[in-house]
Length: 429
Ligand SMILES: C[S@@+](CC[C@H](N)C(=O)[O-])C[C@H]1O[C@@H](n2cnc3c(N)ncnc32)[C@H](O)[C@@H]1O
Image (cartoon, rainbow, N blue to C red; front, side, top):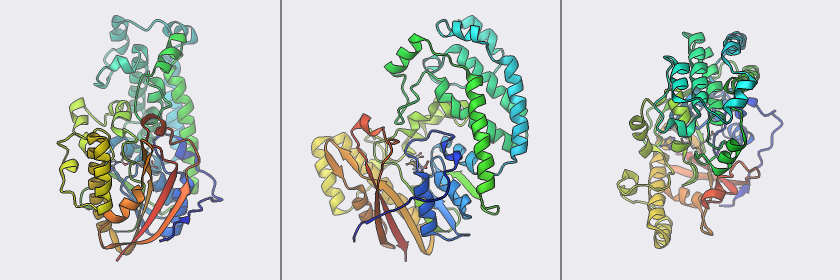
């Protein structure tokens, strides 16, 4: 089948809501919008089983589709829900003013910030300032946050929860804004998208003096989130709804039947979502303990360093002959990578079966996938995917486009270089 160029440019203005939360390997919004208009009709139901930060779901409600999203990552579910739910912007403006008013009395002045830049509060000061506030059980908390920043985040969260008590819309808006400043308030480097590290670059910045003003960060972010919510409220089709749930895309589908699945599965060994999202997950109470969080780890598809005991690495390998050839070739270079490869393609085989069962007869599954490059070798993931799908899914189109922006900068860190994306369109018999 000929690979056609996918032209996705559109005249629709880019919605600001796509930028409120930094999420790795997001859909390029015009791509999501074009796939929706090309492969579904108004009123159709669309499923994104790897919904991440909900780019597809946002564009779906804008285009008058019913959107269903699922992800194993609790932060992804929270962000997608918060971005796609309905709001009353006037109410949000009122609650935001209330929170910021409290902030005026609790935020620290510039003189204090100048001092704290080089001299954090001590244990005694920390205990006194925290005075009964809740702080999440993040392992090595003070590796990730300064003490005074921890206090300020705890005070801000306490204020948010008090003011938004019993108001789900206000709570979602304020907590989304809160979540979006956590990484910038931490000691971790906000730039790399692949994981979460306190880099030497950040250590140098901190040693040179860095002001971390949690309330100011929140004020700026919440203002932008509110503006983006107003914009989406005006742009979306009134009757269109989105429902997002925590769901493992490898498991049999138990939701509503849909006319289209449109999704971009995780890339193999590229982004460590589990590690990257730990701070936000703890602060939002999406995990209560490290043990609870750890229990989620085996469900993430596309991880590097898959343990030998992982069920996807042990699953009966019924893969295509070319997948077997790749497995052998990779195995000659590295057993560990061969295990990652095997686990990834086993998981994706299950995910395709699940997508198939979500579709009505004649429905389409549209899968966006990048090629992986390892040590100079390009793995034609899209070609392998074609061989993994159940026989009920027939390939209808194969499109491709260049990835032009640098949002994929994680590729430089792990040698997986992805500069082109493919769109496989399957039709259910
Ligand atoms: C490439 S990202 C999707 C990004 C999304 N299109 C967006 O615009 O934000 C892949 C997502 O798959 C999720 N994921 C990984 N394993 C999963 C699984 N077993 N079931 C469902 N989602 C999973 C990750 O948490 C991540 O959010």
